[in-house]
Length: 128
Image (cartoon, rainbow, N blue to C red; front, side, top):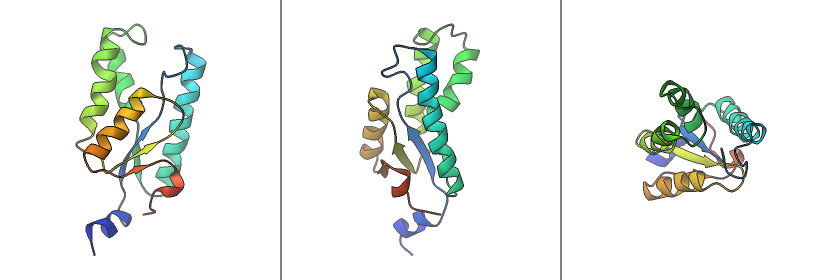
């Protein structure tokens, strides 16, 4: 069995990359809508047998522990995107969802540069 075929038969660690703040003007309701999309897509991937992850799920608790008091402050910026960049050394693929987002587009570019598959729909992700 080739490496590509093996990837189809085991759970993949997939970063779900979508907008968090983009287009929200930091409105908490719009940010929550963006998070809901990534969470819903993550659930779909999980039910397919994969291990989905969002950078937000990992970063937000640490940002709070670092003393952040608002989106975009120094503690937020220290952790939010750098954490996702570090995560790339462990990922198998990226699923890009949602609308415009410089951060999500950066994750796609990093994935492509590292030779990782990039998907744009849950339907394109190979089943386990």
